[in-house]
Length: 318
Image 1 (tube, rainbow, N blue to C red):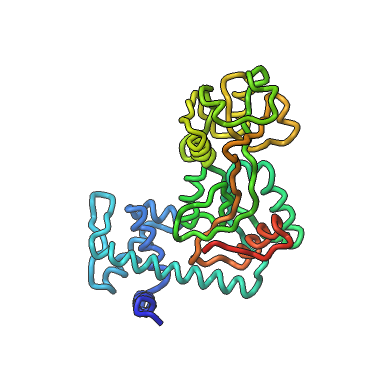
Image 2: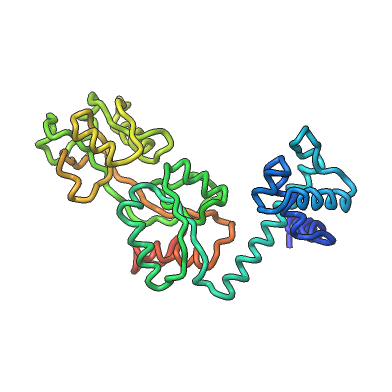
């Protein structure tokens, strides 16, 4: 066992010994809220109870943990140092609870999944429904948003798994490629290239582009593809949904680079294959490499991967 791990375990045991678990929960809540009443409200206990608990904790430690500032409190240097250890200790306890729950019933519990819009419209509902055929008691907490927001949620531990359209360049993430999806040039029906079946992207260099807001994976992909074609796109409108961008193109307000929509929605504008450069995006699944995943989260992760590659062995990028 490494010295770092031994030190971590020692700190956890020292914190827990002689102190009540509830004391540590109360201390953490007050540290986060910086207010006894707000912490009590968050934990749904009385304010005097939480105040007495923190005072008793400070007495046991022999040090004040907070500076009182009017009706609020602020962690002092002792409190900040202690909070780091408490966070780690309570995190270990939470992991232990999840592990025990998995041992009793690995197909119960919940999975928190973040996903980009495309997955929500076309794939995720079928994946959830298919998984719940075998595991009907599993609950799902779903979060849709931009690539940047989803990665922030994943790193913060707010989600277990994240369905994305780009391979995140973050060392702590694991990634499983699911499939590649073609990106089309979409132009208004009256556009000069609308009768073509295929174009070079450079042919749109002088057109106005309908693109996506900053933070969205498709915004970054649009800029990278245009750069490879030798030009900087002139963005006139920004949207945060593929249908919105497509609607603006259909209204004649510009051109766009987007993935396919359901066939029933693709009749109002012209979809063109791009021969140069190759226009596609890789869809995949990400999770934190060294973070504990519950048994049910692992089951759903593997179910997703096998749904897109049923005959292939599971391959992860660590």
